[in-house]
Image (tube, rainbow, N blue to C red):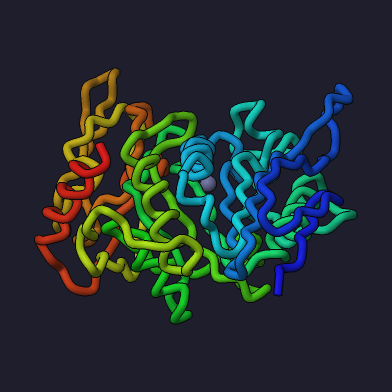
Length: 337
Ligand SMILES: [Zn+2]
């Protein structure tokens, strides 16, 4: 029995078809048309329907390149199920090099949205209706916010068995158990019964080679795990079990000034360890920034200029401390750089 067609943006896509369609969005004030580009590969054979979304935050670009590379993968010709890839969800933010929408709202705090709400609420609603509601699984691609970079990591609510299994299969060494945030795509998708992972890697407004390569490999790993692609990865897994962080917190600047960092992304730190020093360029005073608890640096600020209260180092806590995470991170870096 052949599969049913799928309809996106009023376009009916038959099994075996691969198309790019545009979802119309509200215009700019200048009357410039704004569209959300959507790539659909509707396989002939039954299988999961997976969405990959990037750039919900308009300045987070790694995901655009990850989607481009995934779509160029030859193995997709034998796809089981359906892949719906949206490289730029927040086109408004992209053209303004901004995380936000022109109305100042954060799209990833505006779900599920509504067709009669703010611009952000309307975009969230269109994305849920046109894309997410037709899917069984999803992967949402993010980077750190501006001037902040993230160690490649999966964030997911690990309470569900399938979510946990997929999070552990992506192929990055760190998985952060992160409850869904109200208003996020992940929260709305999971309410709709759609298993969703969030991949965080790199920095806003930058392409990061390791983040991009690991993201592409991770998506293909998930598609194999779901039975959408056949075969196994040519590469052996870095390690069978990634390190699961039970929680994480940001160390904030105790003073304003210029930060000289003495730790790096992926470093393992002890409680009380000095992570950096904030210098006052006027009278030359300095103030140490210390770790409140032991853990792994999974995100940090790249810009030396800081105000008191700015988030500087994101430290993930692990249930079982292990030195081997450092080896596994080194192997990961070597593989994808
Ligand atoms: Zn983001």
